[in-house]
Image: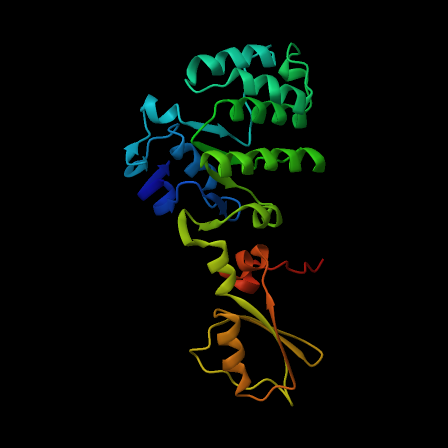
Length: 298
């Protein structure tokens, strides 16, 4: 389990992380989402021990991560901006990883060589960005980490390789109980692989739930009334309301059954509950129309 308690991290007076707390269950795949500048990359650098928080604490299975080699040897990380030694080949980097990760698995290295099909003696810097990302996964997964921390992990990979990489990650999570924390703007992809989600904004965690609970507590209702929509009571928490013709679309913070029962008292002609995607939940949790695409008049 990863536990983050009241983390504050400032740069030149700006609080990138502002009293953030979160909890990542062991063996889960946790999706961290938020707008640009929310603090996701700063949080990841604190989680991996690159930054030291100004205050608060980060613990992996109850142990601090900063300057703790025993904990760091159980963590593999793939940042958004990859780094490899100048002129290093895959073979050179494998030897480096093998020297610092006690659980590094040479047998798996050889097996994944066939999966990725990259010549191990070639200079990594001469590879395309997508192939460099493949090398990063190749090496990280051979470390047999207990924790895998990813920042925009599959950007630059083609669709087939994206599926291959996620298959390897999900297999490790299922077979070894590896805990995965992944930050990404590709919410559709996270929806397919994550079981827990945290939404970050302005350095704070807005909410943190299992994906099933999150999708079960916000619902899109499409309703047709006899006339105009009635005036709804304040305790019916409507996050967003729009109208197309006679169809009203209401985003309501409630279960599908609860929202259906609340709206049934208005005797609608038609009513349908539609599950929200993670992308829609993200938009409406962050402020509804304020985060929608705006028309620009020139």
